[in-house]
Length: 79
Length: 231
Figure 1: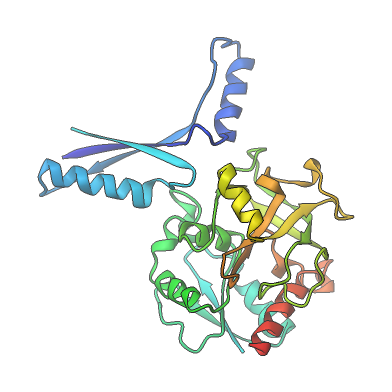
Figure 2: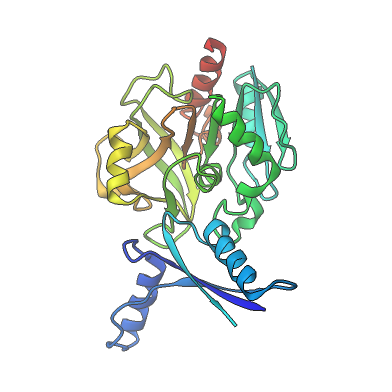
């Protein structure tokens, strides 16, 4: 079983890296780019668990380790 | 008076901190390996600067799960002094012992430069005996020092008097130019509500002897030493 975890800064949190990328894209002429937010992407492979237990474990890992709840939010997808 | 200096894989200010505590301030200092969670016999613990566990994932994010942190959390709960410097600050935030989180510097650059900070509170083990408003010059060296808390919690932090150091101009005035990394309310250091866990982003151990160009940082280590003797 594989899970994907997307971690991004919360919308209310300023993202200096995303802003820098956005500025660069604008200066390259991509004037239609309205905003860029940078985040992290994790692929987590699990073995010997039911899909329910696997999802529960990854949700827990995302909340406890992969994201910092003060500044980041996360989304989990499983396949 | 025994002070433990935690050594994580990737700590790089551990020896400087040990040196200042032991040879400059005359305290009894010893290193505490990150796999050792037994802090018995220590009167204070310092989490030094560096890049614990390579700062992989987030600064301090892996370090907080190392065995020594179980001991540090316990130590802090007992009300004993825990000090964080730079990366040590970030580890303490990740561990939930201090509020907030560090974003990338607003310039998106690693900053290595002297800064001026104003001592806002003198009721912590790191600032005891200093006058409120004391100005100190110390270097910073970080990529993620942009202190963040959501607005409501930031106000609570201010109301509770938990802001211990603020970036200022040389004369102590607040100014956006004097805030090197974009920290909310120019916050350079905070403490917990119980006031025994204190951390700052600047490096007092790198400015603790005249030979290094500035000895202001020594005053913080002396304050710590004094407060331990008094306790």
